[in-house]
Amino acid sequence: MNFPSTQCLKHCTEAIISANNRISHYGRLGKIDRAQKIFDEMPERSIISWNAIIAGYFQCRRHREAKNLFDIMPERNLASWNGLVSGYVKNKMVKEARRVFDSMPEKNVVSWTSMVRGYVQEGVIEEAESLFWQMPERNIVSWTVMLGGLIRARRVDEARRLFDSMPEKDVVTWTNMIAGYCQEGRMSEARELLKPCEKEMWCLGQR
Image (cartoon, rainbow, N blue to C red; front, top):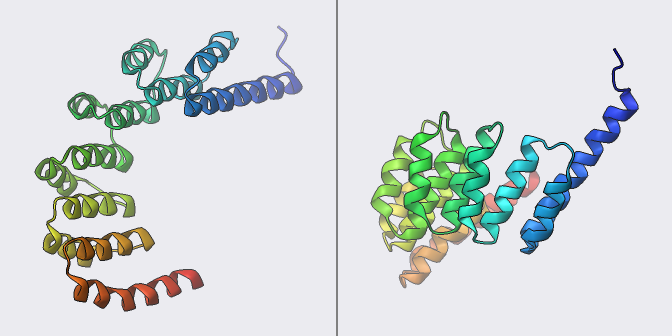
């Protein structure tokens, strides 16, 4: 039995990676037909290839084609499921996103955060909050998305309580909270946050 040489395997792997990158590139540019042509011409596809072409269709707001491809994928991983949820959220199809989310065989912090983001974008803050507090784990993106949702809903006092309870903050978090006070005309509270914000940003810069 003849086994492929190491050189051949390396070449095949590099070709798949190159094609995947081009699919993602054309998808981001909205040139989904070119991305599909590359995908169709691939002699072998990885799960990343499938995830990339599906993301491209969502990017071009062609959610039906994206879902059809997802349905015929030979295998899926957590990134595939997250991509489907995120794709629906980006297309403002939060009900479809929730159906996928509820049917996922497993979830991680990215899955939960995408779903919270979907509800925030649609202004369904109560549902976003409910999911947020159900999350088995949260990262700084999760906290920042929820904070932004409360600020967007003009619930600045609740946003401040959430802000104060955050285990870590970054420049986006601080900026959102300060902007929240500003949009409500609460300039003195915005100014009060500026000094600790500047100190925190200096500390982050020293890490």
